[in-house]
Every structure is written in structure tokens, then in C-alpha cells.
Amino acid sequence: MQLYLPIAELTVNMLIFLGVGGAVGFVSGLFGVGGGFLLTPLLIFSGVSPAVAVATVAPQIVASSTSAAVSYWRRRLIDEKMALILLSGGMIGSGLGVYVFRALRSLGQLDLLLGFAYVTLLGVIGGLMLRESVGAIMRSRAGRPPVGRRPGQHNWVHGLPLKVRFRRSKIYVSVLPVVALGFGVGFLGTVLGIGGGFLLVPALIYLLRVPTTVVVGTSLGYIVCTMALATVLHAVANGSVDIVLAFLLMIGGVIGAQFGAQIGQTLRGEHLRALLAIIVLAVAMRFLFDLFVAPPDPYSIEMLGAVA
Amino acid sequence: MIARALLGLALLAAPAAARAESLVSALSDEAVEINSSFTGSRIVVFGAIEHAPADSDDYEVAIVVSGPPQDIVARQKGRVFGVWANRDTREFDDVPSYYVVHFSENLSRQASLERLEQYRLGIDNLPFVRESAGNAVTADFAEAVVRIKNGRGLYMERPNAVEFLGSHVFRTTFFLPANVPTGQYTVAVYVFRNETFLAGQTQSLIVEKSGTNDEIARFSENQPLVYGLATVALSLFTGWLGGVVFRRG
Image (cartoon, chains in turn blue, orange):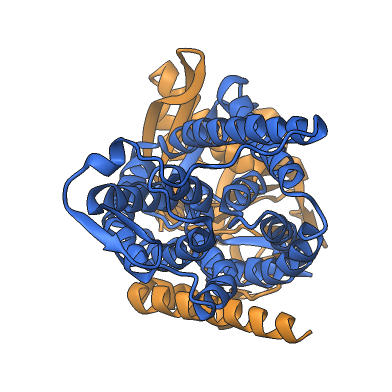
């Protein structure tokens, strides 16, 4: 089943990319994450140019997040006000991200930045998740109750000015950290080809004390919007969105996610988190390897002003 | 274009007396269409030498297919604080995107190939390779471009690849791989005797995306904003549909 991708300008085996989409969809359904952090590297490792990979994963994330976002919205589990304020920062971050992406590409340092960013982000997040989940597993083995969060607790974020009341989240907090968070996640998401849910969710919970019930829905709503914007911006600025490849990945992803979600319900939370942490760390290791091990050919070539 | 100009030069340089023979050549296709299931394509080049003296059967043939020129940047990785990063770059202008030469058997000896240098045949005689020869570092970059293109099946020199079907009729088959760049190609046929140019002909070959691929590529290029919005609409619809289908199922 050979298929020519018009923007990536590659002939690929259709089944392989449906499978890649399916596998990443499975993981994202299993753990409730977008899966961009896995999909972008997988595409790059399988021969798609980083520019096309990053730009094409954006619409795939839109597709994989939409159905869940709609169901959270129906159950009124999205804090629309917070999502909109996040988005105001996210739009600026996304725009700057596309600009930086293009500049790095013309400098020839895109691969290096992607490598560093993935190693750092995935390494830190994966490490923290592993520590937390292994701790939780040990505690439950020892028969001690899990350490709960104390909702009333305040931190430095709550001392900032320009406070706004978020009714659905039941918090009263400054808009500054919300805008900054949206900006940061939008920027990273656009440059790295990730949705950024795995950054946004912990930040909303630990930094802003948003209740866990509305966190996932709000994060999904924000991701759908920023990734839709990233898709359009990448198409306009870089011309590197491959709609055929995106569609293959979406089909695989939507189907894979359903099986992942079913199996995810049978596993315990801390076990899931430990497993996800190991996958995240494995991807980080792969990028670390590329950074420090001599490449088979130190030379590479690129067409100037070309799409892919 | 370059091939055509060179051929013109070659024609001028050829001694008048040796111009008795002429050449007729033809391609199996004038256009290569890249459709959705494109995995590469074969182009057969036929040629016949006309007005050949009855006793002459020692013709030598070289056939060059060259693709549209590109500007290329080559980068070299090196260690910076223990990390492998692109350190040095060189730009090369007007590099043929595809350059494959086929030689007949009697032209394939190293000595013959060296004598063909005056006709600028072969990868070593491409302008960007020749021009970089003065500087050892730049030459390494040019060599890397050739090596990488060779690895992708885009640069090749194949001896013994032109087959004589009779003493005056020959044929060869070029392979355009799946990753072949699109654009206007030239096919140049050179006929020699005793490594002296006798006759030549160039023809053009179009490699283009066809059908849906062509439409998508054009859409993305001409109306990037609408293309981006359409991609988003497709994603939203697919995601929503997936949710609906699987909730009921």
C-alpha cells in the first residue's frame, strides 16, 4: 500500500503510518495525553523532515483532542473563561513559535534545538512522574493512605496582582500566571510539535490550584485551539503541513485511542503514570543518544527555499 | 539548459569532417507523472546513428539525464562541548537535482572517461564540483553532496549501461526513484568515435505531480491560509466523527 505524500514528497507505506498513528493513539487513550511528544519524534525517526513532522502533528493533535474536548464541554467540565485567557497568551506564543521555528530552520539548528528541548522537557517530566508514581506504588504496597493535596494551601502565585474570579474552577487568581502559562505552552507546542497537555495539566493543578475535575477539559479545549492556530500558521509561514499524512495519522489515532481508553480503565492510576514515565524517558534517551553519539554521516544537505 | 549549451560547444568543437553521421533519439515518455502510488519510474532512451558508413561499428555513447537545478546548503556536524551540532556550512548554487550518466561499454574504461573531461561529462565535471576543487574544505562539502545524492539514487555514473542492439542502434534505461524532484529535465545523448564527438541531441522530460497530489501541492502553495483552515476543518470533523462512531459502538 504505497502512498505518495504531496508535501513531505515521500513515498511511504500507508499501513506503517496508519500503524504509527494507531500506536500513538493507543498510548494517548491509555494515559489521557495528546501523544504529540511521541508522534513527532516517531515521524522524524522514520524519515519525515522535522519541519513537516512538527507542522503535520498539529492537525493530528486537533483531531485526537476534539472528541474528548466535546464530551468534557457537554458535561460542563471546561472553565471557558480560563481557557480563553490561556488562549490569549497561547496565540502570541504560537505566533512567536512559528517565527522562531522558521529562523532556526534557516540557521540549520532546528534539529539541535529539537534534540535539546525534547531531552530536557521529557527528561524532567518523565523523571518527576516516575519518582511520584513509584512513591505512590510503594506507599500503597506499605498500606499507607495516599498523601492528599491540601486545596486551601496558597503559594507565591496567589500574591500577584490583577486578580480575576474563575467561577467554574472556584479560584480567585491573577491573570498574569494564566497568560504566561498559555504563552509558554503555546510556544513550546508550536516549536516542538506537541500539544503540551503534559505540561499544562500539572501546571494548572500545582501552580494555580485548579480542581482536577475541570483541569483536563480546560487543557483539552486550549490545546484544540492552539494546535488549530499552529496548523494554520505553519501552513502559511512554512508550507509544511501535509494534509494526507495528517489524515493517515488521524484515522489511526482515533481508532487507537478507543482501545487505549478501554484498557486504561482496567489499570491503576499510579501504574499507568509509571508506565507513561518510562515511555517519556525512553524518547528522551533516544534524543540524548542522537546528541552525543557521532552521526553515521556528519554531512547533511538541504534545498534552499524548498518546502521539505 | 546547461546540457544543451555544452552540447552546442561540443558541436562547434567537433571537426567538420567528422560530422557526417547524425543522431536520432527518442524517449519512452516525455512526461513522468507522480501520482498517489508513485514508487519511481523507468525512462527508456533509444538512439540510432544515421548516415553511418557501412563498415563503421565502433561508436561510443554517453547519455545524461539531468534534473532542474537547485540551490543547496550542505552542513557539517561537529562536536561542540560534547554535543553533535551543525558547525560549518557551504552553499552551492545551480546544483542539478538529478544527474545520471550512462556509458556504453567501449567508453567505460577509466582512460576514456578522463579524455571525456573536455565535454564535461560525469559527476566530477559538474560545475559545482569543479569550482570547489581549489579549496580542500569546500571540496569535502561538494563530495558530501554527491555522496548523499548518490545514496538517494539521484546521482549516478553507470558504465556498461548503454546497450547496442545493432551496430548503429542503442538503448538504455534510466530509473527515476520515488523521491525524484519535480521539474524540467534534459536528456542529452552524445555519440563519439575514438573519444571524439560526432553527434548529439537533447530532449526535455517533464517530471510533475499529477492528479490529487498536484492539486494538494498547488493548493498549499497558492492559498496557504485556506489550505491551513481546510486542514483544521478536516481534523475537527475527523475527531468529532471518531467520538460519535465509537460512543455508539
